[in-house]
View (cartoon, rainbow over the protein chains, first blue to last red):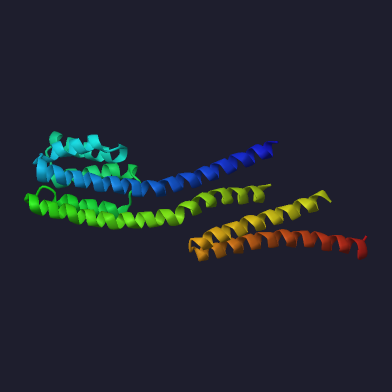
Length: 171
Length: 67
């Protein structure tokens, strides 16, 4: 009886691990899509709204959902609250929030490089920089989709099967 | 007799699960991991079988050679 309960525990734990890993895989393209739409709205704010950067960031934070809205929120707070440059504020808020997202190092570099150009050019060059960042993000998104379709099922079944194997070995 | 039936089921279970793991890993193109999994499963079963055969030899020895 105790054996069966332990076996159920093991199966539950490993299956849960597999599902968690697959959730991470499916979360990444979703967040990348959100990041792209965020940059597009930022472009609209800059090009047509002439909004100051902290105001635009605050509006973006209100529009977006959780992990990415934190990023724009901290960015806006740093811009208004402390005495920094845009580049430093962008980088600091990136590194603070990045651990809570499902995004990877490639996107981090893209966003960091984009932050270095932010607020240093006129509107037209700024738009070009946003377009460049968007293109890079699109490439990453395609990569993320491919990884998701390739590994999502594998991770799930791998979790369950490894639990099963462990039980058979231990009994 | 109960022990033997148990061990046969265990070997069959390991075989099935390892075969599934091999197929899953093979499908996504992780051939090297698939081969490692199969190899470890095989070695584990080999140890089990070797210990059982050893038991058998000891038994035969004790029956025919020594009292």
